[in-house]
Length: 429
Image (cartoon, rainbow, N blue to C red; front, side, top):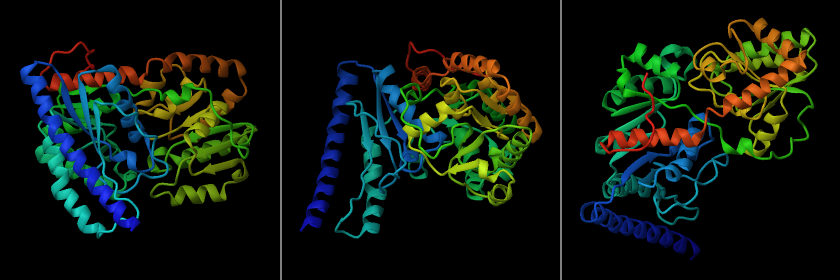
């Protein structure tokens, strides 16, 4: 009996949502045409929220947290394009707002009808109907491109490009992702009304590698998650007292071999602390895993697959330094978060990292593990330098605010829609 109740409740909620959307469309028509009120309806792809969060997911989440605050004319329709429950490591729900609608219909446990035909019906009939009734003025794809099944119905498209690693370093990109980006991204960018790049480095790559006109590219830096500025929780008991920190999915472009070898050389040079790696193993990491297993300083390296946000903040704040020796970064969120916490940064001198770090950290050649080791030893032996970089980092992190990123993004939306706006221009390269 309870399964019938669950199933009927699902369809009742769906029907209520559909009717509400229908009447909302007419109310919006009345406000626009009869009362002359200005508003902008934006559809947004939020699929990254439904899996373990990476930098792209947090980028979208923080923008959507701030956009309704900075722009009262915006109405957001958030499309999940999935019917599964969010991953346990997904972000906390966005605050409910009368100007934000979630287009997510989770098929609950105990659903009585066959799931596959139900999903097919939702995808082919219900989702397109919602998309039509929502009447989006434009669609925002925060992760390179919009969902295929809605692409033809999109009026105007704004897309964010985080990096072009698939062109710069194709051997570091998973084959499925590589094929997807190579086949879809050039066409998507050709159709996009505006392209947001999260750094000048990515903007330059768009021009040099894909021939995108600089007038279509808007550079909008990412920001610091406010959770890193609050009072942190407790550092987990198994974390050593003195350590260097690396935070990211463990994958080829993060230069894991250089990281492990540089740390080993630092220990051999007298560094007394540990290395803490926070992030799940990604693809093609067999060589790095073997390097870790046979490292002579293996007992000084701790790998954690995942830490909750509060615990990660605490671990970051207690770190001696954050290491980011990547071959390529589109922006480098962990770097800004570390600087905001007053934690010194040792990062690569490539791609976006010099642009983000400035003079508030130590920059090294990622091809030289000995350079990373020297920077670690220099920082460990000079308390004044550590304090100086911590203060510089805090000051520099103030340049990267999600509220400002949201204001600049809203400005791009309004300009694409042909509306006058008081928002600052996102500068083109």
